[in-house]
Structure formats: structure tokens, C-alpha cells
Amino acid sequence: MKKLMLICLFSIVAVGLFAQKTLGQAKSGSAEKSDPQSVSILSKVNTQYASYKSMQLDLKVTIEDGKFKEEIPGKVSVQGNKFRIDSKDQLIISDGKTNWVYLKEAKELQISNPDPDDVAMFSSPDKLIKSYQKDFISAYAGTVTYKGKSVHAIEFKPKDRNSEYAKIRVYIDQTTLSVLQIRIFDKSNINYSIEIEKFVKNPSLSEAHFKFDESTVPKENTIRLN
Image (cartoon, rainbow, N blue to C red; front, top):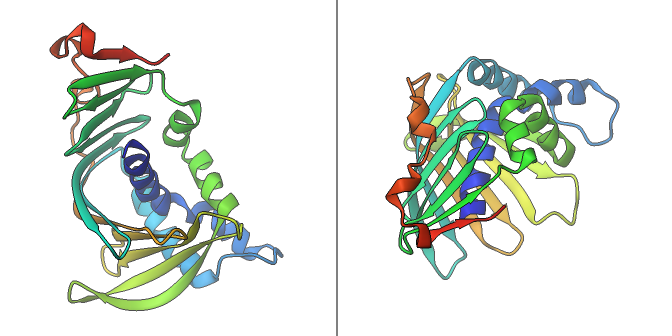
């Protein structure tokens, strides 16, 4: 679940920043390149998202494989290289120096140093963009009806045929250029839907919001991983 929630967070941030590099890719002579219309839309989304100093989102993650369906609500906050993800099963917090993962049912706290790649993605958007540019190309899939209104649909397809993902589809509001939903199609027939139910730009977030009070968890329930 931790991996899933981080994928959700990275996907949301990456969509807003992807076009900055794919614009150059679309103009190159590469055989695999993103089409100009998708890049044009993503470029506008990028300009908007890149202007935010902080973001807060209410999410609904849906997991389904044809046999079962699970919906997981969550709240996400991002500010620079700091993030906070609160779901029904766990609370994940990083202040850029320390990661805290609190497993709610087990009442267990895991403390670790952040993965350098994770920190780099948030502190340096260019690295996040390059990671998506390396693995995916984008294509405009037309307009679709989403909750009663017409929205842009853009697909990201992996360059690697052996990728675990078949495609990622993103729905973008035509007026506000906000990302509304991200759908991840897994080759193992498990599909993920990440719906942004509420988005707040530039909220005022305290330092304490990106800290975990370790004194609230007994020492015997605290595990230091590194």
C-alpha cells in the first residue's frame, strides 16, 4: 500500500510537469515521440502546476481486477521535498530528511531515511520529468465525458514493451487545466483509478504538518529501518 500511495503521489505531480521535457522530445527526430497536441495541453498544465509552492488534495484510489473492487480515500499534501499521505491504513510523512510510516491497525511506527531518488523527485522537478520522459510517450486521446462534462484525455504509453503498465490515461479539465483523474492499466489485469476529489493550491502548511510526533507511539512499537 505504501508503494501504491507513492505511485499515486508521483503520478499526480508528474503529469503537471511532464510536458516541459516532452515538448523538446516531440520536436526531435526520435521514432518514439509524443504528439504535439498532447504536449501543448500538458505544457499549459505544467505552467500552472509549476507555479504552486504547495498543494493539498483529497483522493479516492480505486483498485479492481474484475473479481474485486476496493476504494481507498486519502489526503495528500506536498510542499517542496516534503509530503504527507494519509489513508485509512497508514500515515506516511516525510520532511525531506526523515520518513515516518505509521501503520494504523498495528499501531506500529517505521522510521527511515528517505530514498534519495524520492527526495530528488520532489526537490528537483526536472528529475521527475526525466523519469517519465525516459519511460513514456504521450498521445492525445480526444475528449471524453467525465462526470457530465467534456474533458481532455491524454494517454501515456510505456516505451518498454516489457513494462508492467499497459498505459496510463489522464483526464484534464478543459477550462481549469486541472488533473481530474489518473487511470493506471496494469498488464496483470489490476487497474488503478486515482480521482482528485478536491484540490487546493498554495495552502499554508506548517512545519509540524510534515513531522510525526514519535512520543505518541510506544518505543516497543517503533522500528528504525536504517
